[in-house]
Amino acid sequence: MANDIKTILDDFEFLDDWEDKYRYVIELGKALPELDEAKCTPENKVNGCVSQVWLATSVSDADPKILHFEGTSDAHIVRGLVAIMIAALSGRKADEIIAFDAENLLQNLGLDSHLSPQRSNGLRAMIERMKLDAKTATVN
Image (cartoon, rainbow, N blue to C red):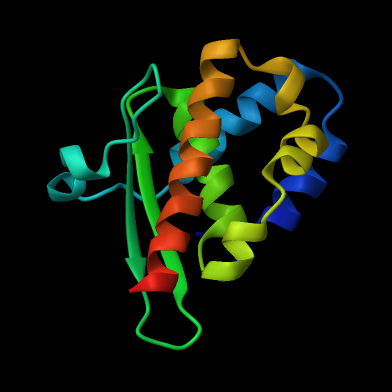
C-alpha cells in the first residue's frame, strides 16, 4: 500500500479539525487496492462489524512468519479504517502484530473519541482478527 502508518500519523497531525481527518480516512479507503471478489468469503468476513468487512491474510513461509493483509468494506469510512490497519500491520512479523498497541494508535489518530460505538467495536473486531491470524501463524 502506498501509505505507511508513519505517513498517516504525520498527515493526521497536520489536519486541524475532525471533518478534515474524516475526509482523509475516506480518501485512504478510496486508495486501498480492490480486494479480489473471490476473497470476499464467509471465512474472510470480520464478525462484529456493522458494515460488511472482509480481511484476507497471507502468511510467508519465512521464519519468522510475516503476515500480509488485504481488505475492503462496503462503507467508505470503514474502508478507510481498514486501510489504516493494513498500513499499520501488513508486512510485519507475527509477534510484532500480536504485541502491537492498537489502542495507542487509535488515541494518536483521535479515532478513539470520534468514532461511533458501533464503528469502534467493528474496528476493534478487525484488530482482534488480525492479531488472531498472527497467533495462528505462529503455531502453524
